[in-house]
Length: 328
Image (tube, rainbow, N blue to C red; front, side):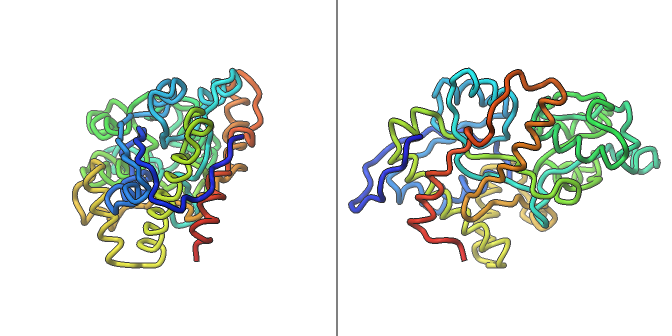
């Protein structure tokens, strides 16, 4: 694998980068890096392109129409990788370590209020919204349903982008959904649904989302890729200082960045949100990726066997941490 170049000693050469985002809370590292000038500091002009699901981002990443992205891993990415389309998983972009339950399961509020749905077993045969089949979201839903003796195949999976789940719940088109923040909190706040459980309760440590680089970015512009990771980790460390260490000023700045770029505009609701885990050293939980992969294989989603560790390229994170020092 290509290695990031040494840290520059002079002002970095200007470069542009197209970045795919989900406009979700776990994009906080990207948004903070933009708003606090960390990308600019690295000589980077970063343009965001929004996507509604992981499947939508795969083709642009595979064709290098965008340079990088942040989304969940799916069998589509692994099948493409097995066919020689190199997409590199370079850093954590969202996990559900304890206390960071930013993904979770909701049910329609009317079903909860009537007592018809109070636990995972009550979702048997019901319509449950997922952003895509065979995704990290479905793997997470499967973990939740196991608590009621069910699996994801025991519910009627309904494909819906996260932004459409609230309306679908309010109209009764679906009975439940698995969603990420800020959509989870927005669903509960607008009364269309109620959060049944957050994922740090039923699948702690789940590697929900990743920073992904295209092969041309890694092999042809490793300096740009490395600078991007430095800026990203600086922002993620600000995020951890804000939410892990309680720095009120930084918390305000992070919330303002999320308000600017996501659909949740009410600052008060950020006090209710389950924030995503963002590893301050960018470490990817490879064991969690393997667990999701085995779920996809067992359910016939995965066409070709791959070695998950081959997909993960930790070189850029290692170089960024060496430059910045380990997070304290």
